[in-house]
Image (cartoon, rainbow, N blue to C red; front, side, top):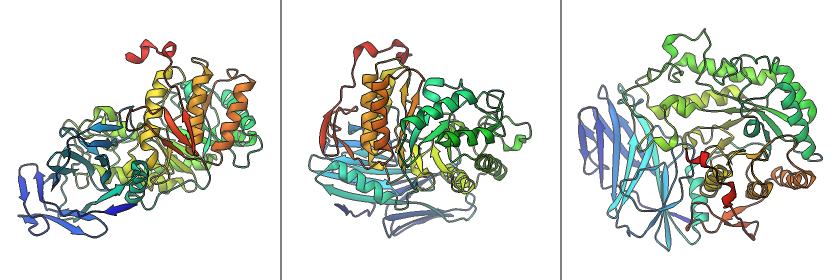
Length: 522
């Protein structure tokens, strides 16, 4: 049970390109020249701002609190996780994206912003209080509002007593009250983690037959997602208007996939497109290799690609790489905030968060009834606009240590977001024979037992009949997703080994020294 807490701030600051504007009583005095900051209570603390020509960069809001230095902090991430989340010691220099939990041994305190804010929001925690930083920049330059009243964010705070896991889950539901969920559980195949872009129509259809055979008798049919390598260039950078010599006819491909008994899905990279028809004015000013989603023509171009996939007969779209293509950085490189360097979107009148939101809205609108799986997307902006989200960096069909680090960590610490923000995808089971099935079987058991989507990259001929029987059992479980998992040792480790699966305590052994590979250290 959560109790909402008082969010009356003690101080606020607005940073423009040239000034630092202090608001020592932010609920009372709220104007400095043309800059007006509005903080109002109502379903949380609502934050708004307006200005004419002053480029606004950041808003900082401060609450004085006495916080025990022994408190543990659970952080989230800007986009995907990279094996780097968990309960940590307090670090005043560390910015915590979107929301955080603070546990003092008895009480769990929760602070966050509701999903789909107009700013990138990050928190800092120190023994004397809490600060929220709202990044209103357009790229890395101040946004120019020209008199527009910007509704930045709604801040939430709560305290929970007892089970910190249930507190985290309930707080995620408070931050997102309108998740977009699939009408039925999603599971099935994805060819990336054994093919790695080297595939063909014939090979995909064989994958489809295998996935269909492993799910025989299950009314809720599985998906088979064609990952990278199918586009006209063959290089995973578009154009996305047709296949290549290995995928000569995409509408026929989708129809044949459906005939095998699977539902067809397709991957693409919307903001990297080398089509000759794209004008230079649509290109990013950060790097012209990529498209600028603040340009209306770019959004319509992306929407046309998405509508084309619908016309071809695909039922799920996995859109990928957009966060990297916008900012030029992976999540683990973003440090304080995603935008670094000196650049802006072509539309200076909107914040980076607003521009990304309009991009997600456009994909959602164009997709119609097609399911949307976001990968390398920003979950706090995509909640309510995508059915599923890849919440962690890639697992592996080649290196078990990578699957352990990326997969187990992200599932354990982002599982409270499942069905609160969207259906979470902790990434694939990559079955290539590169490491023992006994290890992958554990990962499959946890995924199936977590009630989250289970995608399998299954290299033909690798699994024996015993392995196939186990996978059939996991598919039957994943097709219903009625199971529940809780990491029991998540306070002690970033890679929980002890889990409660539907009331049963299960201990996993993620560490097998013979599977370590020096390539992972590179």
